[in-house]
Amino acid sequence: MAARKALSIGASNTVRVIVENMNDIDADSLRSAAEYLMDSVQDLAAVVLGSCPGGLVAAFSPGVVGLGLQAGKFVGPIAKSCGGGGGGRPNFAQAGRRKPQNLSNALEKGSGRFITYFVVLHALVHIHTSEAKYVKPYTQLRVSLVTVIS
Image (cartoon, rainbow, N blue to C red; front, side, top):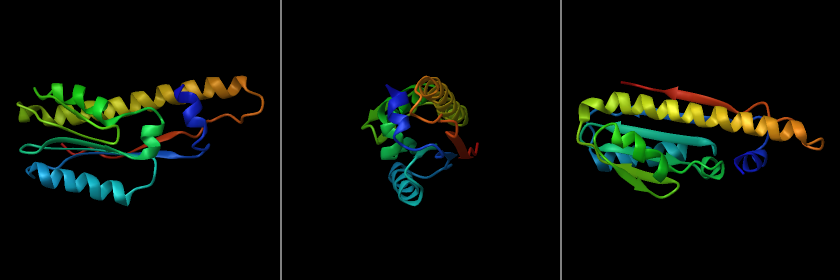
């Protein structure tokens, strides 16, 4: 259960989410930017980047993957709103798109999916921990949406 996985990360972690439109960089540069950002942030981090020629890239830290969120499954529905598709591994995925004019909306959809996921996870963990006398309530799971640029 996702709630049990979340209990193991501690009670005061922030999930850092970076969602950004990188404008006109190519696919290789988009991948490099995602890798650089993942190397620069803390363990609980997720990066989703998009560009007109480069498509979409999602990179998730081991901590985020441990919470049950997989980049390969996450990026597909976002890419569909751009007329494309994609997938990949739990920690890294790429997607193409045929409708670059929908990129900003796709990135907004991506940030909304993160927030929805972590709010639901927080509720599950809170319910789980309130029933267990030996586990203190997990009330500090926060999502820090670093940036969304359209």
